[in-house]
Image (tube, rainbow, N blue to C red; front, side, top):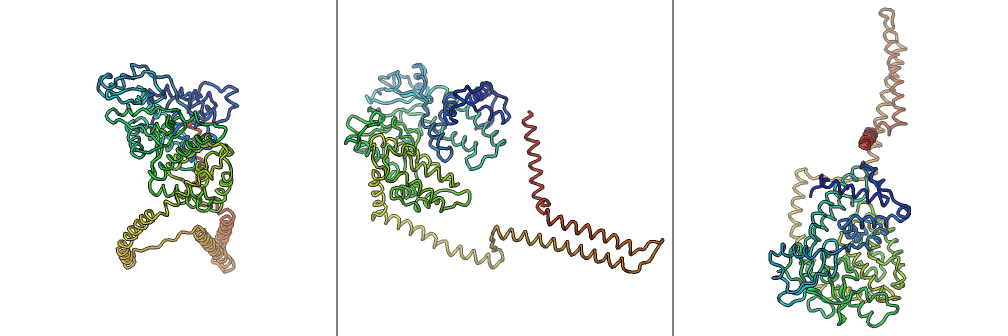
Length: 577
């Protein structure tokens, strides 16, 4: 991937800067060395919250930037809550492609005449987005299918924007020192991976096949079956599922049998994905969940999915049960062990924050936690605040839980959230304590222990050989011990300087008091004594300066000062350009 702005991208760069200036972000890029962009924010834009202005800017910038916001709307470890909330409402509906463009894409991908593939094709799309649109069609085999067609030229447009994003990220990192591991370059790189995967429909086809196998024959869940023969990088053909979007069933004023049954079908579906299969739908918003006429639930759009390894599943199970049964200590330790820390973590304070978070959810109805709709997302945000970096899958999963919880809230108003999910937590505990699971865990532990015992004699022999040959070294690092060593070294230097100054001064007195030969009428020992006396005064003065101004005499101090000076003039020089 090229990471520099190309000549043909300069016009697009100027357009991006102008839109950002329009929404009040022009000063940021001017401070980074770019020419002042045209366009000033009006009064209404200037008074809007930052998160809202950023969302409107992304919408105006087009498909790439809308996708950027959508991808990171599931990353509470990267963005603050107010921006997350705004980005979650991003939509990228655009006018549909012309029929001739659809025909061109299909024929170029399949290398077949259009009429040889589809017996019927509805040119009015079921849905139209920035990357692709979906049409209803019928194959010559008689199967009703949904055809997802990628827009012509969208890949090239996104590649151009990615060049610009990489360059902007590099400039930002050179000019501004940002804390944390999520630097602008890493954020753009993650987005590059995500958007590249979304542009390749074969990856979505494989994800759909996996979900179809997992739920095949399920009494309450329907997954559309993909047709690999007609699927390419820019074309996806799947069985057509007809039903009403879940959003039409939300917002009931009172819980009824139908809404409760539908809520538990959705929870059962999520339970199987996360805790049994280990792969889950990353964007289960109400538009991607259909309710069929017979009451079953249909899941569509597998562009964003997540996969959990066995250790990740164990972590999620421990975290979920700890939240349900209000075990703050277990939840804090589970999150701590699941992530990578960038410094010392105050576990007592972290546990206290977890307890305060739990107080907001226990004994509270679903519609009373509107301001904090997702407990797991709040856990991820807490971990980021305490410099615990969790795997990206946990952030995507927190978004999944949040969307499911929002749907449940719309179906079961006034219901205690913890009591509603407690049966699922009890099922998890029972499954972990089942004889089959215990037997598997014991067998896995025995195999791992056997490997450790097998390697132990070799490792012990190597250790003894290193000790015998003198190659074994033990290093102990203690910050207080390092400070003590520096203090001892400094004290030794001062004592040596004081002894030397005292010796010189005493020698000066002896020479001044002693008889001295007088060549050329000058007392030789007197002159030498005076010289040594001046040297003694200078040495004692140097000792005093070293005692009172030791920190300014350290080489590291001057090195840092020189670096700041060079950085200052370099900064000014770049700004002048």
